[in-house]
Picture 1 (tube, rainbow, N blue to C red):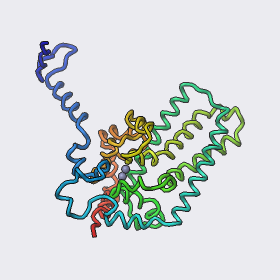
Picture 2: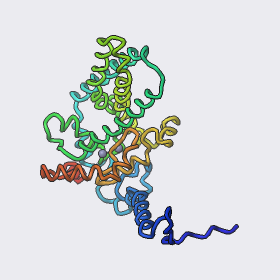
Picture 3: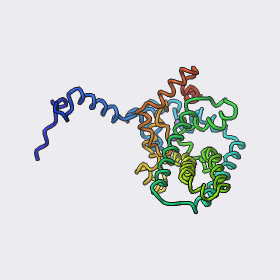
Picture 4: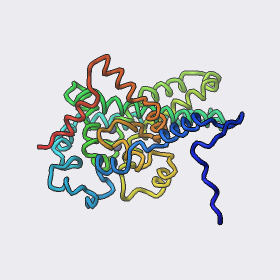
Length: 314
Ligand SMILES: [Zn+2]
Ligand SMILES: [Zn+2]
């Protein structure tokens, strides 16, 4: 079978509807820029931990006899893991119980107002996108700024982010409470407001505002599920088939997709609910622009504390 003739890269198309030579080259450069991989295979292999390779078959020979750059044997990871306190554990338990109670109450109160229509679907999609964006902003802020020494938030909130970069598999050893406590905590004020609205407003007001209530409720559900989805994206063995199916169809954060964030210095792909916004935000240079503005205003270097922990080797 004869192959079609290749189109020369700069063939003349000067008709009214055709592309001019310089336009064609511009479009082609744009396409190449947009389609270029955010991280190459080589960068992924050399600058992130091979979580899917427990026997370290792909470990670089230069690393075998040196201090580990990642994993549970890393000195910084061990120090950070030791900072997980009983007080923090108690806070996580309380947040999980309060969040689940509010979630069930809000769901039951909403049930009699539900009308399955296109705007409910729109509210659901908007809720997922908001949760994905919020996961990116919170993750970026915690990864990039502040230190573990900061009072209150340092050990309780920033510590797990530092630990996660030097020992990404530690999340797979955390139980349900440690994995989900902080995300459940974030949703409590919004869920409490929804329950308050559903118990104090009359039926007409609830029906009028139902789509807004449904949007916030679904957003809370996705925010609450985010770190569980994130944990699945680090789990290479024993995942239920339905989770793998959702990952493969990119309904939730896929493993391969999240690996891009874990390429040192961890400066992109911060969204971890579905990851749908990672590519557009990267192409818009959203995080770089934010970091440049904040650095110019405050003089703080992005990821300085993260680097400090990553370099703790002895
Ligand atoms: Zn991170
Ligand atoms: Zn991760």
